[in-house]
Image 1 (cartoon, one colour):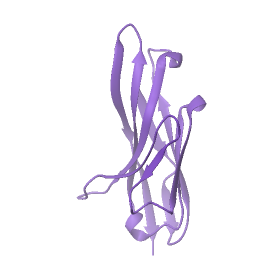
Image 2: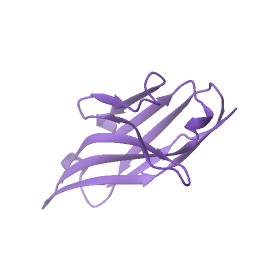
Image 3: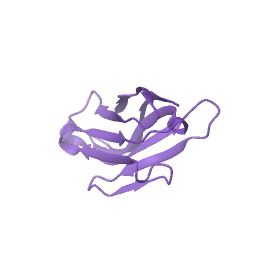
Length: 126
């Protein structure tokens, strides 16, 4: 199971970006995959990793104080996609954003895991 974040870029202070996270994989049927809680993290060079937001399969959300009120997290379970709408961006939001997800794969063996993906860079200019 793999994740791929996209949608980053350069934006000016106060601007908006929408990040996407796609779940992919091979060697199994997606009908056998249950993607549970999904997360957005951010981490820049020399910075501590910060949990930005999370969303359960049922749609319950949680946000870091730094993101609450400005960011919205959503997902499309049918498409195995997650999104992060970021508004009123600030220079301190500049970071590499990663998505990950808890999953259960009901294959020949039941596999419980957490998948990570490559990040997408968000740069906010002042």
